[in-house]
Length: 324
Length: 306
Image (spheres, rainbow over the protein chains, first blue to last red):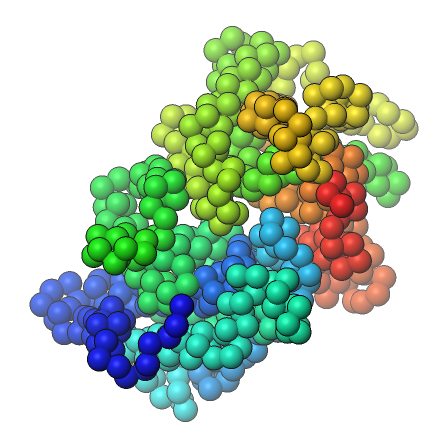
């Protein structure tokens, strides 16, 4: 596939989906004034936070074909960095955020170095096992709430000021983070580094034969994805003002994969749409019945069996794009 | 005193290992022969436990309940295979993960709807109740010994089945090269179905056996499933022998690590720090073991594929 020139006449048409998406997200707080403001704001904030996590997963899953089933661990690591630091009186984001990112990056480096030695089914099971390891570690942290989790004293401060205490301010902070994450992922994907990762997805033997040390490239990709997901964990803890081991259950990792696939693998904005689709569907279905998973489970099976390419693929097919 | 504790915990570890083996045996063959990642294998275990609980309540006898639960678990596994799994064999791993994840979501919720969210309990059968004195000061419940015994018996049976019979030969051949087996004229679809149904029944058997000593509840298979993955990864995908050794290893390390880890650490650091570190480390021990084994042998201890 050849890349069209960056500013050609097709620019707006090509970029229509992400541009529309972000414009819509920027306008939500204004619509929220009409009614049920806090409900809508918190729902869409949550969507955007999970969109960051899904984006980071899409980077390795969609572009690198690395099916990581332990990605929720990074959500938990980012969250617990906030929780544990504020339990010790350190509430400034300038300390919390770097720690959250560093811890996530370190965990990604160690587990990634071990997991990437394996392939296929092994890789899936090992990332799953490492995710579960992080989960049990959180459960055993009795000093920080153990199984029950811990409530934060408040949102992170910036230079001692409560800049994101207001829900609308927090909303825009999260939107900014999402925009930044999206931009970062876009530039990674089209960079030389990103092309090597994509090449490894298509044909690892050939990439290795050309002389690329794939392990190193994939490991760096894994660390970037984990760090970015740590950012989502940092934001999630701030939104809920609560952290618990439930952040990193393996079901949560599965849900992240579902989001990426629902939106369409390897499209980036698909990850955002997938996160929105999943969380809104959950919200909508659980409004009907507490047994919403009995509807969602079969829906998932049907999507896998009949709708390849996820929602974006379906949209493309309906739009007559022809490459579904 | 401490020796008695060691013996008791070793037996407990052995019991966990045997359970893990019953679940892992089917799963490792499904992985090995079909290259199919089945997350829903843990719910087979749960379904087995629920079926045993239901039939035991209906018939009033655990052994009748067990006898009815086994063919039902088999039938249920075959039904899932027919409806969903057989359409996934030639898909990539990601599709398999997603679809079987959907099945877990559905079935965990479905058992809540059918049997209620409250845990069910099954009485220990009269004939296997009470404890037996193994040596001075060492009492151990008969039922737990029965679990260990039946698990070991099945392990031996399975070993003979896989290494001595024609179907076992086909399964082994399938694990090392399925397309070749198919090319030689074996109906690979039928072989898949047999392996799958058999694996589902073994997992169901494990669930039915633990029903009297654990609470039967939704999601009970999920955590065990992940421990089973650890077992399979350590043992090497597709190897029943590897699964057995790894299952016993994981069962022992997990159980003994939880009990004795803090005690060992106490010799190295002050008691309060030791108990905290021990509590944090113990659940991670099996995963550290897995990481260590994979570091030296990325294919596990006994990989079926060369």
